[in-house]
Image 1 (spheres, rainbow, N blue to C red):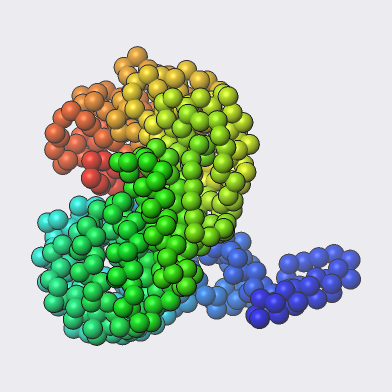
Image 2 (spheres, rainbow, N blue to C red):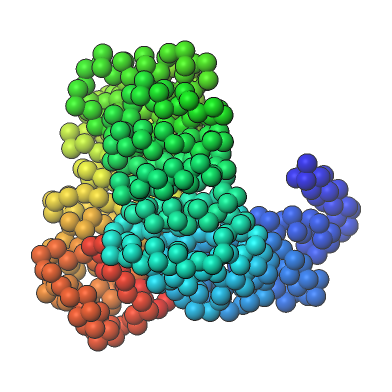
Length: 572
């Protein structure tokens, strides 16, 4: 209703302005300007209109701000912290911070300058890969945010292994419940201690858990939580947890549960009868989402059809819970439609599909993983209209020269919408070049290919290297690929404009030999992710060496993440 009124007002305003001999942006009434500002990010608003005049300053001060600092440069981060946030922190409604972007240690830097409780009108908070030390200062402030509705915390894998006890003690010290939070998302390798936190959220109605370890949860703790819970939506994302454990977990379901979503990589979760036994007793359940991506040992069509036949029973059809099953060789994907997940795996050629209903509802998918195998049969006529990240898994026997592969991709997705492209398996350099030519907005290219020969093919394709150097900001190479000694000069010359680079080295000695040249030649580099294969190296020793040998670029921050050493440099 509000949008319709705004569009009408906008049309009337344009009509009035067109009656004049010239047009000024300032002629728009405040209502229209505020509506237009809804479609701009805070940086653009401040950069364009701040201190333009008293009227625009007044409008800026009353805008509901949504701050996302996850993909910005260090200079933009500083502009936010020094200019924007101090002016409008009371009008910030959502805040998103990440330790994985261009600003090293972003969460720590941010909370050095601001206290969470300053953002008293905050409705949504997202923290991506925070460390436990920072959480110890953040979580105690959460109860003071009286209007906070949405909380999302995504941990990196392995980060809680040594801190589980500390997290439990930290949550135990919370003096107040968080009475405002209704929507919670956790991505964590260890979930056990977070049940304590969830029990302090009496108004929670939506819970998403992505974990691979719930085995240590004491059954009584979960049962106590669910019996007291007002949850209506539960989303469980378990990669390898066994079905029998999920059956035990959902035996004690929240009493008001209306919507259940589940995803896994285990084939046993395609058993419709076991799911029926779980779901049938849930009195208020009206919606069920399923997304299973797994390997199948038996490629017999009859066994695959048995999966679909189970979901054709009255229990599923009566509730309109419809299933699609895509399969090729030993790979199988089983999911409900409409697709609820934003990630989906499918095939471009030669796959077979079976479903309990005819439908084409894939609007929620923005990350699409497509397998290419040696088949000339094009069967995928579905439309994935909102995909912005594409991963292509290429079999080494696949021959793209016999097919109109770019046209076939265009039938599935709008290539101009793509921002990220990932190639895994065999590296077909001409296919990558043609995709980049048609996908003009791709800024991040990931090559998860193996073997020196494939990377030599990349460097010898001068047209592709030139295109990457012109269009790509982030080049993420498999950490199993190492720069060969006789190819270092060619590599640095080919990719001199890259801003974020990920690469592997065979040894510390090789890294030390290349490091100085790398900083000299890649003048725009602001982040470097390195993996050193053969040597067990001391992180502190390497960091000290880096600080002593980074004359061309001053190091801003370093962080060790799993098997990667991440180095951020000062720069735009």
